[in-house]
Length: 310
Ligand SMILES: NC(=O)c1ccc[n+]([C@@H]2O[C@H](COP(=O)([O-])OP(=O)(O)OC[C@H]3O[C@@H](n4cnc5c(N)ncnc54)[C@H](O)[C@@H]3O)[C@@H](O)[C@H]2O)c1
Image 1 (cartoon, helix red, strand yellow):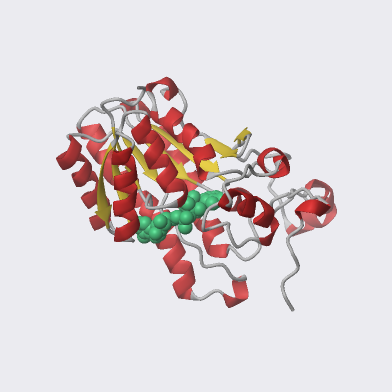
Image 2 (cartoon, protein in one colour):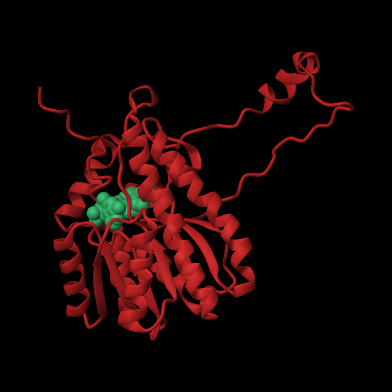
């Protein structure tokens, strides 16, 4: 098996995508530290891995703090002797439009996703560098972080921030042979179950049926298990040269995202004054407006969600 002898931590792996990642890493031979805030689902996750012949332990603690990050790395080392792979997956949503978003909703989402990623990766990097381990850091982004999304100020900030940190870590960890990548998943989980647009796919999945090809192919929306193969691949020795990348995956679709690059570069001797921009601004900036938000194809009629009961 490709990950035999390796040790992985997957945050937020009691259910959903994290559970699928932990199960796949274990299936490929890694010993796994499962983490969640919910003790019951963390225990079930460990049991499911063991039932399939794998090895896992659970750490029930909220990611965000340095204390939890240290606890996770210590659990990997104490239980399995080392740490090779970290997947920072734990997440929560608190969606609402900007003018209704409270400080608490902003801080909670930033704390779990952005600070949780920072603190866990910092501890893993310290351990891997000190022990000369050419480790694998896999962080979880979102289409919202790449493009923006209505009602997700806090989540967009956290997920865009994660991609920015990963680019920086790819530079900083290169000499140690540690790779850092972002995976941008889309899948049917508790997080997406209530989005009306995905209703037909989530319903099919819940019944154990295949999702309609429109979702799997056109939209790149599938099951959590569909995302797990990319996580195991990036964690493997085969992906030693892949770092600093943002890789989108869902259903039957795989995407490599571009990093931002200037689309127009102009020069003005002496700089760009208000007066110069009054003359040239609409041509250079207004004439090159970039789009924001995700582009969803129209749902075919037969996949439209049922109208809510009156
Ligand atoms: N589902 C999607 O389509 C999708 C799309 C883009 C990004 N993501 C990202 O993938 C990740 C997993 O999402 P999911 O859809 O599986 O969600 P989910 O809600 O099903 O699972 C998230 C898990 O994280 C746990 N968790 C929450 N706060 C935690 C904390 N502080 N510490 C430890 N565990 C914590 C939860 O208990 C839960 O088990 C998240 O980072 C999410 O933003 C998901």
